[in-house]
Amino acid sequence: MTTAPSTAPGEWKITDIPDQSGRTAVVTGGNSGIGIATVEALAAAGAHVVLAVRDPGRGEAAAKSVAGSVEVRRLDLADLASVREFATAWKGDLDLLVNNAGVKSTPESRTKDGFETQLGTNHLGHFALTNLLLPHITDRVVTVSSDAHKRPGTPRIHFDNLNLAGEYDPVKAYSQSKLANLLFTLELQRRLAAAHSAVRSLAAHPGWATTDIQRHDGNALTRTVVRMVGQDSRAGALPTLYAAVQDLPGASFVGPSGRGELRGAPALVGRTAAASDPVTARRLWTVSEELTGVTFP
Image (cartoon, rainbow, N blue to C red; front, side):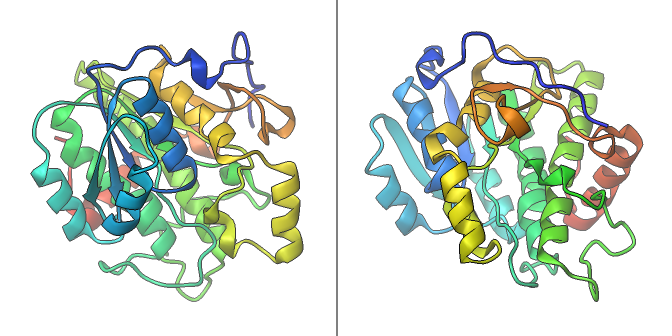
């Protein structure tokens, strides 16, 4: 079951972001789509923003268009060695980590560590990155999920076959990875609270945003409909930005406030019962630790 969304007061906009001077943020996948829109907004508000990207060349090209303090560092979430390298190189405090990067509806494939690509990139890579960086994080972690966790067919975590070997379906795999994002957010917040940490774990979803992540979605007609109905990347970034800077409770989930959560101003939104299950969240955490070799610090 889902709960009814609550609308954000005053139709919150990018111009409502408070001064971010003196703060440092990391945005994974920060070179395109919602990622670069998030980088632009945070940098414009005064933050120093690190674009954590798989292709530094594309990252540098994107960074040139940003007004503000930014830098580019290599991070391949589909390669745990790259994740460890990025985290090991980090020095000093990190106010905000935005787990934004992702892949969607890709043909069946594996990461360098043998994980199904969507689960490995969208969840396991960010799981490892967050835990490795957590000793440096001072404020919050925002993980970008999707309303795909609500798709028909009751998405679940396939613990008996996480790679979906022999039953792979790109939509099923994507939905599993986005459900994993929400369960990760929930269990991370539980662990932070138990450790009496001031750090908060939150999640967001962009609604229907027309970005390059949808290049594998359906046919040309489907993609055309998304472009007509959806919102642009700057509007799609609003829920992430709202979760990143507003004073919200840990484990909050932010999405568009419009009908069907497809578009509109950011607001607190509901999630499915499967995405709210603490038992499943703890089980997924344990499995993720075993698969990545990374534990809660």
